[in-house]
Every structure is written in structure tokens, then in C-alpha cells.
Image 1 (tube, one colour):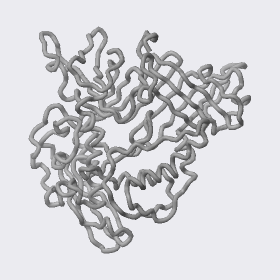
Image 2 (image 1 turned 45 degrees about the vertical axis):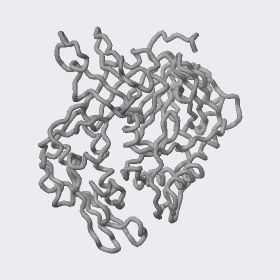
Image 3 (image 1 turned 90 degrees about the horizontal axis):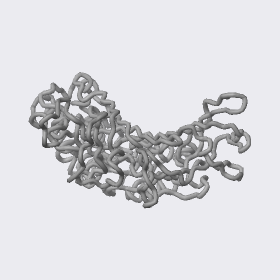
Image 4 (image 1 turned 90 degrees about the vertical axis):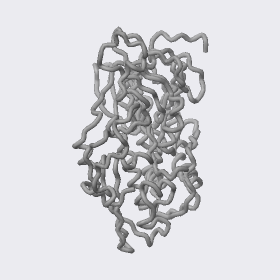
Length: 471
């Protein structure tokens, strides 16, 4: 769209923005009433949600009959981007709450409309009870989504349904489990604990992004994008020149450089040894008890000993060598009943070597999954950046953060960046914040690998790792 010109970062075009009530009235164009709107997406949340602050001087809340259950349809596009699905934020939501209502003066009132995806709006009203037989994992996921989850879109104006994007297809397996009046989404979240990718890694997540629904492996998100991250984001303070992207292999570098520069970042921590020890982040043991056979199995985890099996954002280990650890310090109890499920007995496979080759049972899967998610706890930051509609959670970005020293005389750009804080990060959540003339994003980004290795991989600091059943 060559006729469009970007005059400032965060500039966007409103192509659809309307509210449709349940009584067939003509839709209301919300651009005339919006003060601000926030839309949230998160790889650890099954559906999107948000809120919009309305300034109402026309009494549309009564005139249109806004009581909850209305649909809000949006289609926003960053200026100059082509109108195609990967470049736009186009979703339909359902109003589930009206809050903070009050008068500004005798002619105007404000209130907040809270909304969520149609799939989440009625999820709790569709309990599933009884034994669920999984005879083909991919087919079961597809049927569960199409038959029980995506039907929420039927209540929207166009009735269009979203497909489920599964990446990669989970390994084929057969098993059964009991759904105790769980909702469809609860069933889907439970299945993420069983699904294993082609490497045997049980790290799937079910979530909705601004582009659609995913049942996706965390490892695959990282590995598939490392060769060409989405974009390079640079921390730039006032008066500093931007860092060049020349020579970088990026999958989406279609906006001016200022869209990927920021000067606000929250770094809660990069390491906390005491908290890591107490929480089991660094080392733990999972004790699985079979209530039928009375078997017990102990599975040890160690943040450094198991890292060879993990897919990392960069090659260096995030936890430095020689941090004291003990797998017997933190015990996590799990219970199972093998008579109900003959395909997932206790005491089968090992966490480190054989499990990754696909031999591990449910208890090993959970120990491995927990340890993998723990590996992202330290380097979890929030950045405030200019808004853009071609981004979504699950994207990998490259972050450039400068060293805290004089840059005088430094000719090589790589020598000026911080090797700990810089590197590849996965976007886990985005809060899209829209105002009538402004669009910013609060992004949570995480990583579990460093540009440089922090000591040897095998430091032998976990004296109980082998004794507790470690790899």
C-alpha cells in the first residue's frame, strides 16, 4: 500500500471495529467511543481476552441494550503493511462483564467492557464426563477442538470458525483417561501433558494468539526460528544511534527501524540461587506412586545435568556452573493408577537418555516437562515497544542490549553488547494497548540459553543426582 505513510511508530489503521448486540440492531462503531483498549495473548493461556474503556455520551449502553454477550469485531493493521492474515490483528470477542460504570458529568458516563474469545465464553457450560479413549492423538485433538471448542464461534456475527494449528504432529499413541466433568479446554490442557514431539519431548502448549489457535511444541517454537528470528529489538537510550540490522537473517523486517527500538525494560532477576534451590528449579526429585501395584519410582532432575536434552534459545547454559544443588532437597509427589491405564505404567523409561528417545512413561514426562519449563524462570523480562499487528506470541526475537561501559573506540558492534542479556528470546505474552492515536505493546520475553557458556556442562555439584534416579 504505497499511498500510506508512517508518520510515527505505533501508527495503525482501523478497518473494522464494531459491537453487535443480541437483538439484531445495527452495529455500533466503537472508534467513536473508545478511550483505550487492551488485548492480551499468552502462550500459557488457552484463549485471548481484554477490556475496552468506553466514554458514552449517547447512552448506547441502554439504547443498544448492552447487557453482556455482545460480539466485538476488530480488524486493525499497522500502517503500510499488506492486508493479509499474517499482518493484521483480526479477531471477534464476546463481552462477558461490564465494570467500573460511573458518571463523568450529567451528560457522559464511562464503563469498561471486558471480553474474551467465543471459545472461552461458553467453555465452562460444556462439561465432558466419562472415559476418553485416545486412539489417534492428532485425530483426537482435531475432533475435540472442532466438535467441542471452536463451536463458540457460532454465536458471532459471521460464524466463522478457527482451525487448530498443530506443530509438529504429536507421536502416535493410544491411551484412555477419565474426564471428571472437565470443560473441553480443560481436556485439551490435560492432553498437553501427554503429547510428545518427534524427539519424544513432552512440551506442548495449547493457546490462542492474535493469528489463531495452536497446539504447539515449545521446543519446535524455538528450533524452527533460531535461523531467522522474527525481528531484532534493540535497547536504545535517548541520544544513542540505533544498532544496525545489516547482515541479520530476520523473518519480518518490513517496518522502519524505530518499530524495533525501545528504552523501557523490566529485568526482575537474572539469577537467584536461594530461590532456585527452594523451588526445585535447579534440582528436584519426582516420586510417582502407583495406587494399584504399590510401585514407587523416584526420578531426579538437575538443571545442568538434563540440559543436553533441552532445546535452548542459545547454546550457553543459563545457570552457571558450581551452583550447589541436591535432587533430594525438593520432592514432588505424583499418584497414578495403572489398572485404569495400561499404557502408562509407573517405572518405565528414564528421564535423560531413554525418555528423550520416546521410552518414558507419564511420570517421566511430567518430571521432564516441569524441569524444561523451569529453565525459563530466570531470564523473564518485560519490554514496552511500539505496537505492530504482524506479531504474535510464540515468535522468537533477537534482543540487543548494550554493555554498561563506554563504547568509545569499539568498532565491532558485537563487542559492545552484553553477552548475558543479549540473545534470542521467546515472546510468551503480549498486551496490545490501543488508544485512538497510539499503539504500544507490553511483551514478556524469556530465554533459557546464553550467548556464552557459564562454566562446564558437567560440574558434578549435584551429589544426589545419580542416587535419586537421575540420567
